[in-house]
Amino acid sequence: MKAIFNIESQGQTRSVEVPLQQLIVAGWAGRDLAAIEHHIEELAELGVPRPSSVPLYYRIGQNQFTQEAVVQVVGPHSSGEIEALVFQAEGQLCISIASDHTDRKLEAHSVALSKQVCAKPAARDAWLYADVANHIDELVLRSWIVEDGERKPYQDGPMATLRTPEDLIAGYLASTGAATFAEGSVMTCGTVGAIGGIRPSNVFEMELHDPVLQRSLRHRYEVQVLPEVA
Image (cartoon, rainbow, N blue to C red; front, side):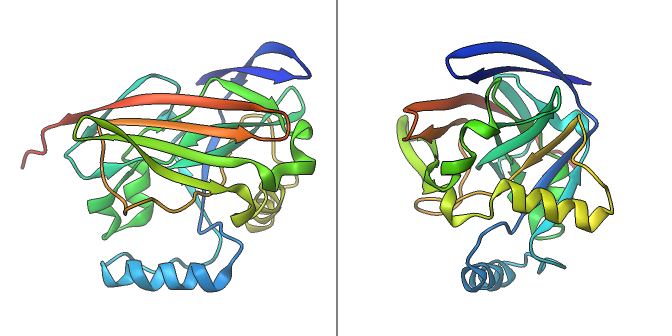
């Protein structure tokens, strides 16, 4: 399976084909451990199991990665969340965005399974990570949903609240014993809180904004709900 990214650096854009070897979702990726513990306790009250470690790296089937504008899910219980996405392309680390779309009903049974059953929509545009590394904390994650026919803000928070991609990559390598974040490795890097609570939407729009270089990465996808039959 391959992904195609349009990588921008210093005003120049090139198209790169990336062979997908492994898809990783870095969960519980916040920097504030007290806030993470509070969130774990909140979710535990809803029946969501406590993570075995923090951060925790979920391996997702590479076939769940998509850059299409429409995804299909079973039942009305899933929702998206924007995350920075890092990957290696031609020996260089790059950054884009993806949605860790998750089945919230299944999440109470198994977080890993709830992530696996949903596609992970990603943008085609990307930046060289080296171009943002020195101001990574200033990048802003944003998303919107459509609710009652109205486009509404759903997430808005800085990357400063999350562990850096370099830290998450180092943690993943340490947990697996791998020597390098190899070509074909793709990792999402944590998300920010939902405004008004986690809830589904048939439209999910997301943006990673760079206020220093005055540019943004954007992606929008629609969700088609398939019947949940027994």
